[in-house]
Image 1 (cartoon, rainbow, N blue to C red):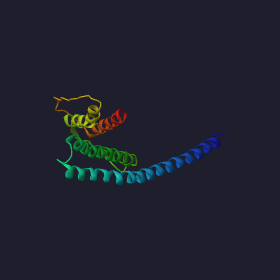
Image 2: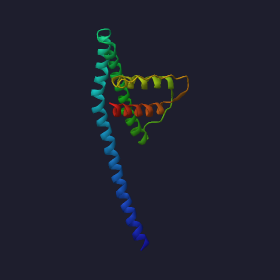
Image 3: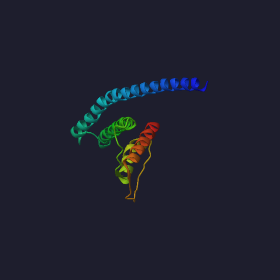
Image 4: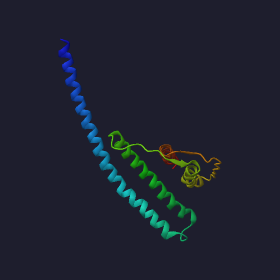
Amino acid sequence: MQSDELREYNIELEQQKKQLDEANKLKSTFLSNMSHELRTPLNSVIALSGVLTRRLEGKIPEDEYNYLGIIEKNGKNLLSLINDILDLSRIEAGKEEISLGSFSIAELLDDILNSILPIAESKGLSIACKCPCKSSFNHQRQRQMSSYISEYHQQCS
């Protein structure tokens, strides 16, 4: 009797494994297709904002000119997040290894400040950042912080 039950469980487990493998394959295909669909227009936004930045320097008000840099920087941040999703997919598939590096906290804080400054100014607020630290963290932490910044930016807009 037990061997029949075990056989049934094994058959059921094998079917579930096949379903999971198929779902994982579909996820990978989806990520691959979506990354292309997202990257192509995003790369255009980044490139065009760079072109406008070069062409409009000194020709439009400084605050509007600064918005072009913010568009380009946030486009690059979004592209980095898309690449992170694909990296995670490749890591899950065992096709890529994690590599850590470091980044400057002061530069990250400066990026945060520049990202939220237009929102603050539009609401009549002024903000400043003084960072005496010279510490560094790994790139994964920087990506997480960039993600938090993007979420905050969306909530404040």
